[in-house]
Image (cartoon, rainbow, N blue to C red; front, top):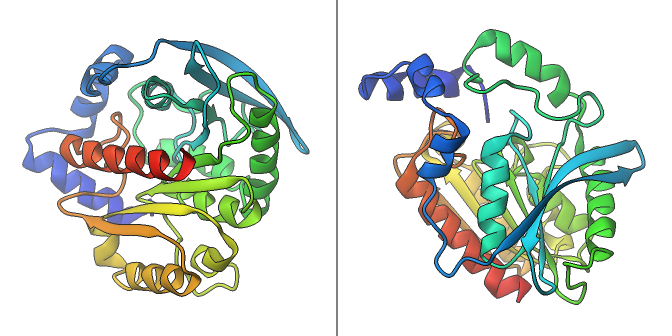
Length: 291
């Protein structure tokens, strides 16, 4: 989870590499972020568009990208606490080049349209955190389910989606739990969920995501940051036991040497080697479960 301890870990990591947050953030133009991501082998030509998806609470601005030809399995991509932005559009495009129709959503549409942070801004900045938190507090397990249902309905009706194939979802940080919640709410439609440095996956609350494993009918990838595991070492055990008892396939792993937030290429904690390994595991999951 994003908290003060996480931010201290990232500060130490950057200092060890002779950098400050300002150094890191100012270097990350959209072109620089794109350059960090390896090219997709045999990449499909894709079509990109900004779309609006109706929900019970309003209209969500989203980025939709898919191969120009054919109908494909769909994937819902939920951004981390910093919201929709160029890094997630690039990640969505990269996934589409591997043969998926990808909907990158703005989880904060109830309180803001478009990007809520400016290029180069860091969650490590207290002023940025203060600005983001009201948006984050607009979300709940209930909004995940209602929004997710709307995204499924939209995708199933889209000509670039094959509705006979299951839908996947990918969530980062606070939206990592959404992959489990959505699969439990729509077990007949969600076939795979990938959670990257997700927070709150195994809690002592009655609605903890790990307790929903038996309600899912999907395969999962749960990629855990090393410093998140150090803080809550029992979470992985609770998750493994829950999915084992439910008879569901779940690849649950702590990624060595990673800090919370290591996957998005614009993050202070980005770890290219481990992010690529996690990405490849996600592709393997989607190929297996959505194919």
